[in-house]
Image (cartoon, rainbow, N blue to C red):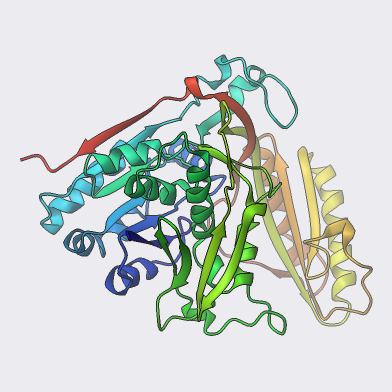
Length: 454
């Protein structure tokens, strides 16, 4: 019976770099898959290019991740699928072909899956924002980015064309796993149960070590061995069975519980999990421990037909933000922090700081849960006052530091400053994320194959 093994090389752009080489060397994998996205990735990339026109339009870690593994993957027949193409998969593919030339891999085939980047046209499609129902056209001047979550069809087409490496723009995270599975097992995209099977496998894998104990450990409640060396997950899939495991000799844990937590991670309604290629019913999934660090995934006809629309994330310019930290320690730390908060509030009025939003929190006391924080009892020995503001203009945002730095001589005794001597501005542009549903017919994609020019 045909068996395919897929390894997770990364779960987001700044994930660890040592998982992929280890999987290539010891994992006996057929595919190495990289998820390089988060919800804000594409918008942040657009902002980076606005501020630095020479910034690459793809994952800046693309070459750093590919260089150690590309030759070994080619030699071992391991195919790579990654969404590191971001805004320009073609540019990313061409960069990998340049790397192939450097590494002496003249036969490497690199495919780019492009499409779904709609920031120049989405305001003209007559769509509304999901969040508030307002026409997108009213925010035309604020749109920085608009990218649609594509499905796995482009990945399958690229693999059918013989690509050793497939680099995509934004696709649903799990699609970097669904694509290889659909290709290997010949699944039809009209078979919503097959699509759901692949998406569920991909969803378990997409966050990498979260399914092998990362983001799971809770000392005294959920113990995970050797978390500093947690192993990346491997999905072992046949026509009839699915297993989640990890490399032997690595830290971490693969259990029914780690799999259950990952299954419902970032899911609003488990019975109706919207995906580009289907709707998946996660309530029809169960797990069975099949050995140490090996769990069988049981998926019972979990699919429903795909929708007529695809989700787009739209990045909107929402001004600027910055933050500062002021530290207090010793007796009366909280009282001095509270007095400093009052001083700053008065100074903001005096210098005419026009802020759309101001937050002043006490880190370690109420900075996370804010109004829901239980009443504080006792006298903390140390307190960090965090001040964050969001403004319409950069000039207003710059006023924060000009009021916080002088506290060294104008504030309470024992006022400490976080990174007082760091140079430059810490003001950054704010990208607000909204979403919309775009008709599939408005979202074409394209597959192109790239090789070293002879």
